[in-house]
Image (cartoon, rainbow over all chains, first blue to last red; front, side):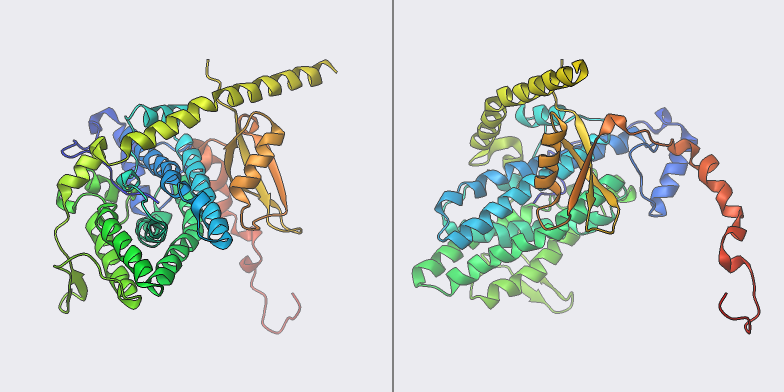
Amino acid sequence: MYTTDLNDKGRKPTAVNPSTEDPERLAAFEARVAADDFIEPKDWMPEAYRKTLVRQISQHAHSEIVGMLPEGNWITRAPSLRRKAVLLAKVQDEGGHGLYLYAAAETLGTSREEMIEALHSGRAKYSTIFNYPTLTWADIGAIGWLVDGAAIMNQVPLQRTSYGPYARAMVRICKEESFHQRQGYEIMMTLAAGTPEQKRMAQDALNRWWWPSLMMFGPPDDNSPNSAQSMRWRIKRETNDQIRQRFVDVTVPQAEAIGLKIPDTALVWNEARGSYDFGEIDWEEFYAVVRGEGPLARERMSARVTAWEDGAWVREAAMAHAAKHEMRVAAE
Amino acid sequence: MSSEWPLWEVFVRAKNGLAHKHVGSVHAADARMAIEAARDTYTRRLEGVSLWVVPSAAIAASDPGEADALFEPAADKVYRHPTFYSIPEHIKNI
C-alpha cells in the first residue's frame, strides 16, 4: 500500500544544478535509463536521482509500516477465526513489504535508522490514507478492496522502474498484494449480501474510503512538480491522473456488482472516452492530511515512536549478546 | 555510536536440485536471528526449502566501472558457441 507522490504543495523539484554532475557520465546514465536498462546499486547515478529514489522508496516503506496500524486495530475483533487468520497474514505481509523496501533504499547509501528517525521526527511522509480511522469491521473490507486495489494500480508499473532493487522489491510486493485486495472485496461482498444493517456498514465504509483512495494517486498531473523528471528517469512509469482514471474504471463495476454505490454524484460513463468521468477531488483535504492534520496523524506517529522506544532495550541486548558470543567463540 | 544491527544478504533454495538465489537482505544481531528474520521476511509462501545468510560486509563485488574490461572481451569470441560452426545437414548427431 502506498502513494506515488506525497510532496507538499508547491514544493520545488529536487533537481540539482546539472553543472555539478559530470556531463559525460550524466549523458551515459540518461541514455541507459532511456533504453530501459536497469540501474544497480554500485552504478554511477546523478545525486538528484539518488535523492528522489531514497525519498520515494522510504516513503513507500513507511506507508507499509504505518499501514499495519489501522488494520492491526481489528485483529482481536475479527468476526471469525478465518477472518482473523487472514488479517494477521495480511498485516504480516505489510510488515514484510516495508522491510523489502527499506532494504532497497539502504542500497542507495541511507541507513535504516536514518529513515526511521526521519519518519518519527515528521520529516518523512507516509501515505495520507493511513491517517483515517477504521471505525467498523467493514473498513477492513474497504481498505483491502480500495486501498490495496489503488496500491496495486500504482505498483504494477513500478515493477519496471529503472532502479533494480526497487523494481525487484515491487515484483515481490505485487505478487503478494493481490490476495490483500481479494480478501477485502470478499468481506465487502459478504456484508453487502448480509442483513440490511451489514449492507449499510459496507456502504458507509465505501463512502468514507472512496475519496481518500482516489487521493492516494497523488496530486493532479498539472500540480505534481517532480513528475516530469521522475517519468524521464523511469522512477515513475505513468502519471498520477492516468493511474487514478484506471482505478476508477475498474472499481466502479466492482461496486455495482455487489449493489454498493460510489459516493460521487458526478460519476458518469463517458462513451467517447471509454472511461468514467468523476467528480472533483477535495485537494484541500488532501494537503491538510499531508501536513499531518489527518484525524489520526498524531496517534499513528505516537504508536510508531512508542514501539521503537520500547524495543530499544531488545535491540541493544541482542547486540550485546551477539558480541559476547563472538568473543567467547574467539577465545576458544 | 550506532547500535544498528548489521546487514545480512539472504539466499533461498527454492527446491532441492536448484542453487540458492539472492532474494534480499535483513538486519539481525547474529546469524541465527538473521535466519529467523529471513524466514519470516522471504519465505511466507513456500518460496524455499533452505536459507543462507551472509554478512553483507563479507561480500566482495566487481566494480561496475570495470564491467567492460571484465566482460566485453567475451563478445568477440563467438567461436566459443556451437552455432559458430557450420556442419552440413546430412551429418547427424553432432
